[in-house]
Length: 249
Image (tube, rainbow, N blue to C red):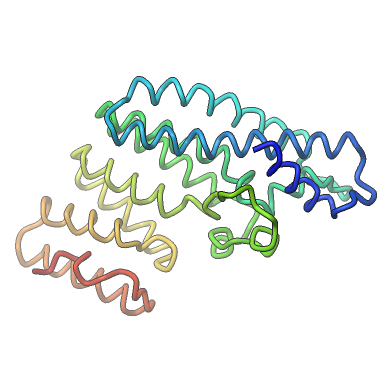
């Protein structure tokens, strides 16, 4: 990991470092190292949860919290609010690994609560992580795409998702389904789809929303709502949302 971080820092600082100070290089190294630990530990946590080792996953999450707090602290110290933007501050905007670290920690908290069958509490964490990304400085439709720097950097041998919006949406919709609050769950998911179908109408959201329709509506009304949702997907050319997601059979 150390060698990979060193290559990343050299690349982001412009190879020979240019006008980047030694202190700034050190800050970059610490920032990328902490962000990398958040990503790697989160993958370990997911494997533990899938195998049912919830207690071990909670121990791993303690390390995730520590590294994510360091990333967030560095971002706050170097936030590009002034005209003199630092390299460390600007990295958040263009490097997914760093940008997603605080969001990834919140998603992990939701996953741990879900594993404990605390679905309402878990939905809150997924909702908060989703809202934080919606308030991101990047344009809503651009924040879930990799930047040019992400694509051309040497990488650490692994990468972070450009955005966790779809993951948060699918997890939140599943929590709402399990929580049993039918009407409010349907309304929340429908409101997100109305806001931006291209971003929020995913396969997982469509499937879970149609399941909620089945549980909370009569036969004909349920089918009508499913077909409306399917027409929305067709209207916005969402070809990745397959017909099976609408549970029309």
